[in-house]
Image (cartoon, rainbow, N blue to C red; front, top):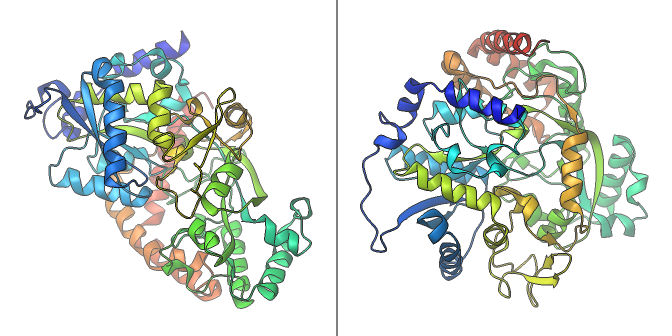
Length: 498
């Protein structure tokens, strides 16, 4: 009852003015009726991560529509957009030109960012169309992570809602050098392994980037956008600080610079446009920093094509930005009620979820153990020629789909335990609203765009560049952002009785 009561308060406390703003001047029920489809059904345009050939996309759509036609009174059209940044860019472009976007995912982008870009239709008026799996079984603290100023901006994705940080690497190559997973206990152990890799495999980068990102293993709470953070999510401190002035950040970029001088880093890694899995699959990369979770072995092995090892550097913790990965209804949706019904079906129907996640049985995957619901590549298919983008974590509810062959049969139960047992940041549930400092946020992001990735990838000397970057951040207004974020966080903590 506590969850239902909390959600009811949100629904009744909805701000009509902001609903109007996010819907371009009309509420969800006042939208102009779209032109009718020849089938008589409303077409829900779904922007999704991943890739598929046109024939495969059409076949997946046809099978999905056979599932949802009667239950939702709608059909879907899937627009695959590659990875996260590309998908968000395409959604922003579509919305800015008035193109219809009905459903799309966001990943750790910050809820207020979605609102300030005018990308989302608040769900307050539409959650009643969903079943209890969405309305009541998602915990109140998770709903808080996707709510700003009373507006519920999306349905939290049911996947890992916590993260560890670590280093993912080619297990076969490490063991050939006499290094086993249990041997990696410290950063010095990792450096010693990377030196061995450098010397033994001169055509391979010991450390590669993820499409230009280093993904440093730090435990800070981003508080929405990295502009003002809690330095240590495992600490009780709720002081908002400049991440780039902290000792933990300085020490990590100094390490990256040192590794670069030793030939351990991919040169000019910030300019790399290829994802880390492709680099490793092609034999050009040994490993990379990444998030760590129970299904990481299966995910990485599926994408790399080789068995991987994991060195955990930061234990599992949870903060708002991790939980706020969500599926949202676009602000240009012409029938948000139909979009909500389709989203509900995507979240609760295992047949539909498996179809969207894995594609067509016999073509893009095969069932290896029907009793334990284990699936894998079909005969003749592997990571190098996979016909579908298996981004399991990107769909609304991975916990109801089949298990990939490299993961244990109980991996989804492990994910649920991982979420429960992860250390919560003291600010978990706080949602940053940056609308009063948008100018400063834009200016500071411009500074970070100029320096941050290259600094974190070991391409710039931190003894020279880090002070310069911090000086420019101050000139751009980061102190004002931190002051406003601290004010909002203090108010939120007081409301929680802390």
